[in-house]
Each structure stands twice: as C-alpha cells, then as structure tokens.
Image (cartoon, rainbow over all chains, first blue to last red; front, side, top):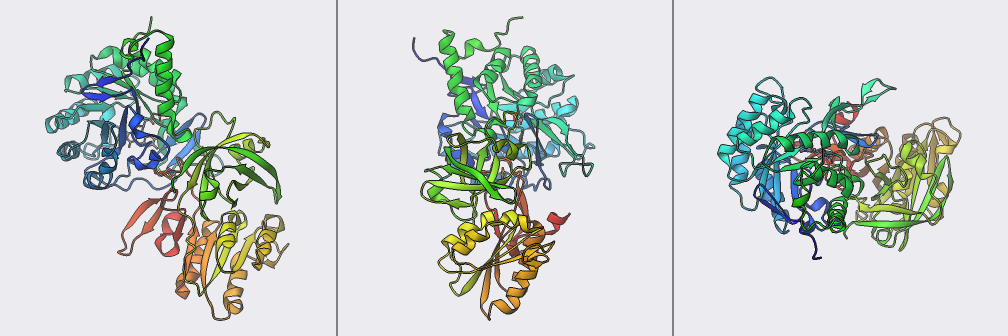
Length: 305
Length: 267
Ligand SMILES: Cc1cc2nc3c(=O)[nH]c(=O)nc-3n(C[C@H](O)[C@H](O)[C@H](O)COP(=O)(O)O)c2cc1C
Ligand code: FES
C-alpha cells in the first residue's frame, strides 16, 4: 500500500498533516526552530496578537499541577505592527501555514487587528481567541456570552477574507450553541478548547500561587474534558473542528480525530517534549497504515456509538 | 551556537556536601557549547505527571560532560536522586545568555554567591583570563559550597555565614564590603553575582554607587525555558526609562544591574 495521505484542508488552510502547534506554546517561530523542523508541522499558530502592544500579567505567571499547567500570562504581545515587521518574516521562510491567534478588549479592537493583519501577505488564517475579558461591556468574556460572541465574529468577518477560526472557551453547558453560532456567523472552522479556569493555592501563605490569582488549566489533565466538548461541537456543525487539550501522544490525537476533529493542536506538551507535534504526526501515519486507511480524512468522526 | 535536544548519560551521581548532589552527564553535543551562567532544561525521568522540565545552572563543563548541582527540595529534584550511572536523561541546552567575560582587563572580577548560587559562577572563575575574588554567604557552614573548587583555581574565597559557623558572621555583604574597603587596593571591580534577590540587589546597589558594572543572574520560575511561553519574565527598564517584561530564560538569566527594576520583585 502507498503511504497514507495525511493532508487536510481546514476551511481553506491546506495542511500537510493534521497536527499544528497551539497558540502561546510555540512563540513566534524562532524559539523552537533549532529543535523542530517547522516545515514538518501541519500549521503554526502564533501567540495571541492584539492591535496594540500589551504587557500582560506580573509573575508568577504559571504553576505546574498534576498532569497540568495553570497559566495566566495575560496575553503579553508586541502588537500587530511589530509582529508583522519583526516576527512574521522569520516564519515566512518556512513552508508552513501561519495562523495568527488574535484578541481584543472590545469588538472594535478585534475588527481592527483582523483588518491590519489581513492586509499583510503570508497569513493562512486568523484564529479568534474569545477568552479574554471584554472591558467595555463589564468584564464578561466574549467566549461565554453568546450575543457578544456573535457580534465579535460578525465584526471580524466583515474585515477579513482569510479563513476565520473562532477558538471556543470550554463552556460545558453551551458548547453546541457556540459552535452553531460560529458557523452561522461565517466561521470557516472551529478550534477548541482553550484552557479551563483554575486556581492553585500556596498553603503556607494561603495566597493564590499566581499573581493574577486564577489562570487557565492545560495539559493532559484536561484531555477527557476537551475530548467530550470536541465530540459535541463536531456533531453540531458542518465546518471542520480543530481538537485541542492535553494532546501529548498520537493516541491522544487519534481520539480527537475519531471524536470528529479534522485536525489537532499540541500545546503544553511542547514544553515537556518540543518534538511532540512531529511524533504525533508520525504516530497517526503508523495508525493509518495499521488500519489500512488511505487518508486521515476517512477517520474523522468515526466514533461508534 | 544553537541549542540542542540531547539524550545524555549519567556518568557520576554523588553527594557534594551541604545536602547537595552532583550529577555529571555525558552530553557531547551540549557540553562544549556551554558558556558561564547558561543552563540546561532537564526532563526528570519517571516523573510522568510533570508537564514541565526543570532548569539547572551548569556548574562545570568540558568537551564532553557537564555537571549540575542540586538539592532534593521539590518533587522533581527528589525524583532525580534515583538516577544512577548509565541512566539516560533528556536535556535541552545550552540555554539563556550567561555572564560576559569580555569586560575591561583592568577590572578585578568579584564573584558574589548566595549558597547554591556558586554553581552558576564556577565557570566564570575557570574561564576568565584573570584572577579575581569570591565572596560567598549562607545560613550556616553546611550551606557554603565549592570553596575548594575556587581555591583550586587560585581564587581567594571570603566566607560569611549568618550563624557564624564558618567565616565572618553576617551576610555576604559583610565580606564584600570589607573587600571593597580594604581589599581592592584602589582597583575597580566587575561583579558577577548569583543568589537570592536581596543579594543581587545589594550587589547592584554597590556597583551603581561606585560606577561599576554588576552582572546579576536572576532565578526565575521557568516554563518552556526557550522563550516561547512568557512565564519567566523580569521587569527591565531601558535607557529612556520605559519598562517591559523580558524573558529571563532567553534575554537572561544574566542582566546588568541597571536594567532591573526591583519594585516588581519585592511587591
Ligand atoms: C503558556 C500558555 C499560553 C497560551 N497562550 C494562548 C494565547 O495567546 N491564545 C490562545 O488562544 N490560547 C493560548 N493558550 C491556550 C492553548 O493554545 C491551548 O488552547 C490550551 O493550552 C489547551 O491545550 P494543551 O492542553 O495542549 O496545552 C496558551 C496556553 C499556554 C499553556
Ligand atoms: S520559560 Fe518560557 S519564555 Fe522563559
């Protein structure tokens, strides 16, 4: 049998394999480039970018927990213009789709950063991080308020022709509603999940470990939760879904694909083993060979129940 | 030279004194590239529920091996104690910007260490083309490490302990100030320091008062170790007085004292 076809068309993003690196865990490209051949990644999702530079939270910003990591980086980034000038040129040297994760504090900021980035050459898609607090409307997040989620999506859709990939918060009760709303507002794909709100306490000082008090939990600890949400979201929409959450092995990724994900992203596991995305892609290939499958597409959503 | 991901072999693992252990690893890819003050990010074997690697200053390095010093204080370092000669360990390194050794030749290198901080300073003494002095402080005699290693290089070591069980009673600044007062005979120092924030700040204050340079190695909680996650930030200021969070794993861990804004550290 010939080698299986791992390629994926993710709402217009043509990927050589279904395994990307998740936003905020691989920097802007150079950080891991000595250790990982970026040409072998399915896609590269850049750390969250806003219109203006943003300093983020004071340290401590992360804490390790059992099979997990809580982070409250606070979206530190140099802003869209510096990203385009100083960081994007490095990534453009590689033959890998570059997906830029974007965020804003208001609907207008989301629209503006999308517009600014869409004017640049060399981007494959925009991933919309809706998990940051909305300042104007009273600090609820776009990702947990359905009407605001629709507004921000509609506003960004008007400003870009790039494939648009809203990244859903792990809203356990309303995941189908958010997935369907994204599809209706013109999203080309969905990604989920972002990290899960979490807390760690230093029992000697009785203070939260993180300066921001709370953060988002990621890593293997969240995988079964993410898997159920991806399964539910994938059933609710026709657009492709990117499965994210605790993926460290090919078996983890295959679970997401069988649950309905067309592609996956590796996040926290990159910190443990920088080559994880490559070994996951190799393991998916081995599985397809072992199961006599010619393409990874045939496996998507084949859960039996 | 580029950092590498390397599977190293344990060649020696023994007590070093003061509750510390010395882990010597065969790492022919990483070891020859190590600059003083750089670190490696080590994946602790068999610690399967850990998502993060653990950073260690490189204590000693030659063409094929590197030595790390550690004390079993947390889950990661406790698990390390089980390593035996022949075991494999995954390393990323060398990482970070270490101590520059190209300062003016008329400066006397003054190394200032708080306890374990000497692990990051040994290579400075070994590789600097001129001899300097070492000031080291700790709580008690057992916390004073590596004196023989520095004296073997011909460097005098001035010791202070808080309980007076070795050297002068007091903080390391007591022996440092004594040297600055009578010991330097008019020569200008260049400081290289590693230890707790209070020590680094005290060294920086003296450098700035005297118009000298102080290279300070900050100790931060790390995530990725390579600049990708933005866990490890330090508040730095530029010449114009603008401040920013800067990655200690990438732009650091060594910074010149004038760059660091200490308010964020003490808050
Ligand atoms: C240190 C860190 C920084 C992150 N930064 C971002 C970000 O800027 N934008 C975003 O949408 N998600 C961000 N994430 C979330 C990840 O992209 C991913 O959704 C989440 O960590 C779950 O996947 P994992 O368990 O594989 O890490 C970040 C995660 C971590 C651990
Ligand atoms: S530890 Fe990740 S950026 Fe420094």
